[in-house]
Length: 322
Image (cartoon, rainbow, N blue to C red; front, side, top):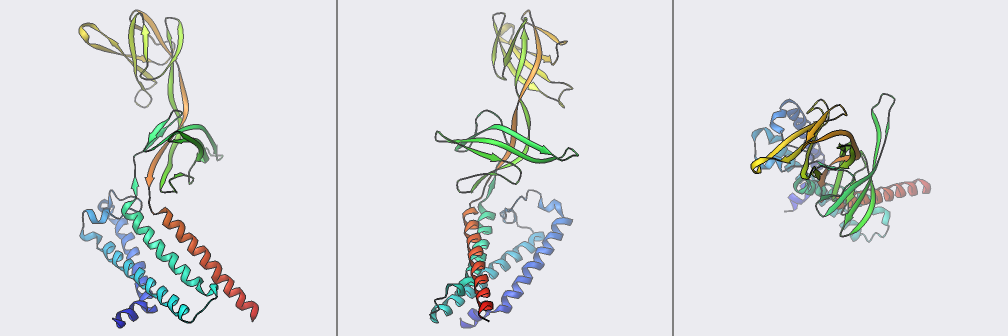
């Protein structure tokens, strides 16, 4: 047992395993580059992809997984051995524990990657505009959208003002590229995927009386109810087209299409209807992501930061004394 313990805490073992992990990462990158069809469906840090349908071409990953596990065990034993020796020596200088704290941060990072790789989830894209949209236990809506561009017209910075509601409580947040909305201590994220203006209402002139209506509204035209069923935008049609549904004879329903523009008059139930205008509202398309490893990542950052400060403090103290 002592031989195994000495082998795992050996610095040579750690170096060999570290180089093995690096080599397997290089091999895996090359395989994924030249055989992309074998990795369709792989996204983000999801590692369950490799275990759902084991394949020979994924051998590099299975070897790397084992190497990472062994690397973590080596670091754990080395760190434990270092702390035990300092405790036995009754060392009370906190700065001496800096390197051990950094190693603990690295261990937590490995665990965080494992947790994120197994239990992280990505949802389907959601379009959010100026009305509340349900996303799990939260509701979100856009209250404003600001954008700046480079001289060539490419987007430079996108900032969407968001309102978030849960259990009747509302608060504000901002969304942008590289600036997701983080909820539940960062474990739930809303990532910006696209932005722009989304049509949300139409202006119809019905028998000389203009009015603003929304999709799925019922409109009274000459004593009959007419449903504003759908709105089709380019490239589906060369121009915006509105679909309305009217009740026909024998319980059947008739679909009528109204093209955008004053020149396109459509007679419905004996009344001339004109699709005059189209109103839009700022909207964003987001993808949801659940990653339970975020709290562990924050702990790892804390360990790295505090450990490095202690190491720097100890080094500076030695230099001053010399």
